[in-house]
Amino acid sequence: MGSVGYAYLKQQLHLSAFGPERAAALAPVTRITRTADAVLVPPHAAPGSEPLEHLLFALKHEGIDLQLLAQSLRAIPASMMQQAVRAAPSGKYIRLACYLWEAFNRQTLEDLPPIAGPTVPLFDTRHYITGPGQRDSKWRVSFNGLGSLRYCTTVRRTKKLESLLAYDILGKARAFLDGLGAAATDRALSWAYLHETESSFAIERETPSVSKAEAFVALLRQAYQPRPLDEDYLVELQNAVLTNPLDKAASYRQQQNWLRGPLRGAAGITYLPPPPAWVPELMDELLAFINTAPKQIDPLVSAAVASFGFVFIHPFMDGNGRLSRFLFHYALCQSGAMPNGMLLPVSVAMKRNEEGYLKALQSYSLPMRQRWDVRWIADDEYDLRYRADDTLCRFWDATACVEFGLEMARQALEKDLREETEFLARYDRIYKAVNERFDIRGNDLTVLVLSCLQNNGKVSNNRRRQYAATVPEAAFDAIEEAWRDATE
Image (tube, rainbow, N blue to C red; front, side, top):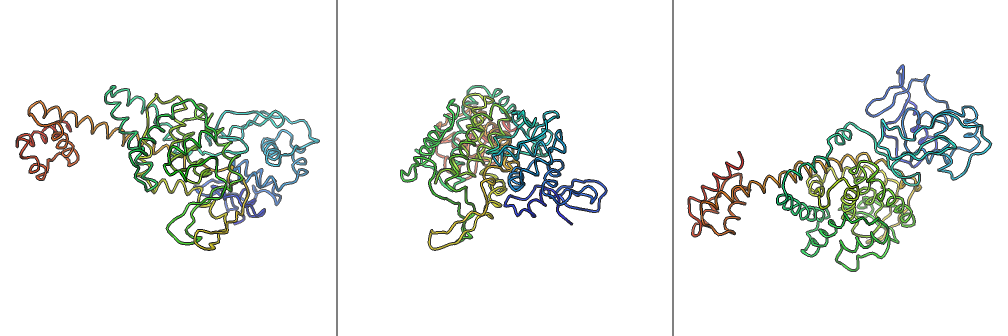
């Protein structure tokens, strides 16, 4: 089958962009048919051999792929664009193409007829999560992407994502905490802050010291402060999450870094972020998004884009993982959709779903790794050569990352916060019931109640023997009875 649209452009123009989400190809069908992984095109509906024809087909039938559009439009001469727009000055897709051609080539198309037609959004709101529109009067096009034409993520409205958005995770979280009462809320959030910290470190295969844990909790609590992100603030945050003074940054990185797996040599390098010269501008664009998007689009969508976008740029030599998870909370806190002090322990859910976390990261990191030539020289010395352009760092599909981020937020609420709150409520009931009947030391009773809760309602024979000298035998049975009552 012959390739069509984006797939044709990638093949014929030898583009380094990632492949399209669903490749279009000629097929023995009577009309254009979309399947789970392809767009089937009958021969009579296929474009000709010119790249612009395939680009216009892709805009109409395949949606927006900014990587492929940017690289393709840089290869199409201005004269061809002018000729096409003269033939159809009100055409929706040629106007979109010309608008993008000027942006990506940083040139202006001249000697044009009057442009007509209603204003058309770049991203179809039926198929994509979109931002507020910015109208271009010349081409009568509204840019409504997540970011700008210098850095923009794409989030497709998949069935999974639509279901998670409809679930109203933040609304349910507010209602859940409102129903707890002040004392129970304080205890639940204290647990959330502590375990969010421990899990964020555990994802990095590290156990935080008391001082490290306290510093990260303090960091999470300051996420509500109305301070916009910039390089200086991020440097402060990076310094706060690291204790080794040699790892603390004074600015964004000035050298190439990489992530490594267990294999030796070049095969052990699993991801290389953008070259250091590109980092300042990429970070400026990402921070512009983070500083505005949480109040403009769904806060959880902006939080996921912020978190994964940051870790893909990897602007520091160390501390990027923890900062990326902090930015998830920062975006939620800055949105105004959560009461001050509220926290969803998403890192707890991420730690429990590490395979899914890795899969979301690899949706971008694996194809990006393929654009680097890596030659191992000796020890920790490599020859690194990037075989693509900056469009791969500026435009990326965040759908898998956003789906994962929202699912982790849902689990953080429905599993982690709810289960811990129910655990604490059962603990209170059991402790109170037994304490009213028996005079037992507080520490001893706490240990026994926790042991019973963690042992599915049983006080083990070992615990009975351990506390036989200080706890009446009947009290052990009373704890188990109170557990049954609390559980029912």
